[in-house]
Image (cartoon, rainbow, N blue to C red; front, side, top):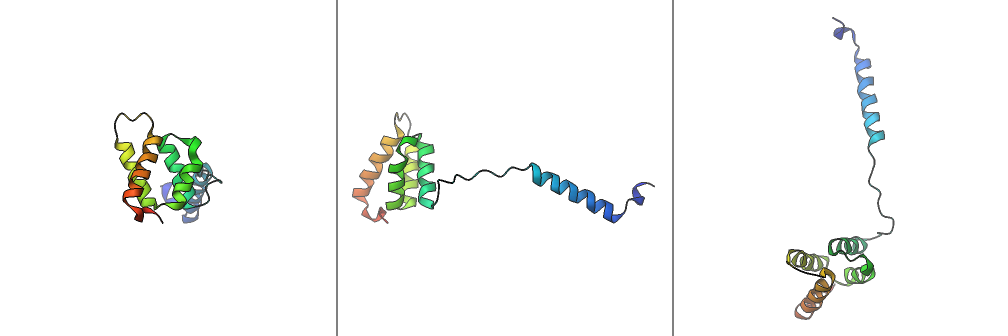
Length: 107
C-alpha cells in the first residue's frame, strides 16, 4: 500500500513542520516592562482587582512595606464584601485598622 512507502524521514519531517508552524503562531504574552519586582506585581494586582489604577504608587508603597500575604488576605476580604462602593477605600481602611491590631504585618 502507499502508506507503507512513506519513509521514516518523511514522517519526521512532517512532524517537524507541524511543530515549527505551531511555534510561529503561538504568541507569547507581553510582559509589562514597568513591573520589575514582586512588589510591583502585587501593586498591579491590587490596582486591577480593586479597580483603582490611579493609586498604583500607594499600593506599591504598601507592597514594599507590608507582608504580601497580609495584603492578599485583606484583598480577599474586600473582594468578598458585598455592596462596596469604593473597594480601594475599604482596602486602605482595613490595612490601617489591621496594621494597628497586628504590627507583625510589617516586613
